[in-house]
Length: 540
Image (cartoon, rainbow, N blue to C red; front, side, top):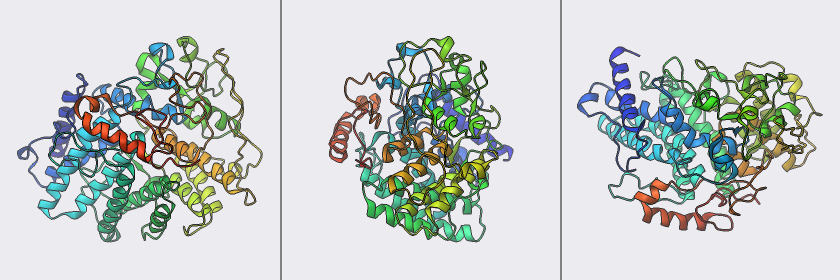
């Protein structure tokens, strides 16, 4: 990246940090305070590239090397909600004597940044890119930005349900929310259009915004593969709410000439060589109060039971016995010496090299495995895609032993043993084995696919939690203490996060209308709490 472009990028990030870092104040969702003037960005693609880069950096909040504030934002966007709800990690901070999100007692301000950042930064930046791209006659630029928008906003709707989407930026105060079903329909239309626009350029080997693209360095073919795999992800997400739509979009993705993400080189991640950042989990695991997150008990049961070679890639062994031990969610009155000390496993994060990954190559294979299991035309068998997904995950994590693992028909998840002397032992959450079994029934093989998919997607808590809610798999250990006052079933577990308090303060009429949409779409109805199901969460 040349000096002039770096100057503008640094200016954008510095502006964002000064406005958001210390005050923690939130902009109105219809106002963007995080952009430079037209005069400052008037050279070549700079008037669109900087905003595109801003969108990319805000899909998952990261620290750009200037301090810890963005890690704090990540923590209150998904680190205290989606990540522990997924079963990947447990919260070991000593806040509120353990009565907080981790025990289903939602704390205001602990779950709102996912929403706030999307509508104060991602969406306004997307609007700017669309506007300038139209003025420049560059539909491909608009298509690229729209793919990033869908990646960012599907995470938001999957956390909250109805969101302001189709009418965002209409110029009115109090932007109305859309039903989640309507949001997903728009996602599919946008991805379909973007793939159609970009495919000719991709097939010709074209580049687009290479100086501003911190994911694929302008490689359009890789962007199309990502968009197509994202289309398949979203298709499977709605399979229990609208099976016909799911099959139509999945088979459309299977027919895409450029295919899916299949290799580590093609997976979607933020490039360390182009950005100075470290994964926000680094701060949560090592810097914040000597560690506020550790290995979760559920992933302990699965990976230890399977003697999974990826354990060392994901976690650091406990120093007292050099083994891997997790923590139950929802523990009250944690003893910091026991829970953040030598008895449990920390996260394995290299400060300089661990990337933020949007989508793994393994996920693309597991998505196709499930679609094929359902009898859809995906160009292969469920077994072949399933085994390819495991091998891809091993490759992505630079781990050997995939052949033995794929053929392991005996190992099962193990029971959880609480190494902190807390007395929170638990039976094994499942008896699912690894090796594919053509004679098994549909649900058994579905559990097999989703369990391995879940392991492969670590540490993406947003996707891990979404897949658990959608399918019921993997089977996760329940919370030790449920402080939801009866709003969330301990066994069914948390289904969504409430709308941000800031929305109630600045957009109350729209929020109240959104609650009615939520109630209408939810299985069995519901209100703005963690026990209400989303539109796509329809599996009985």
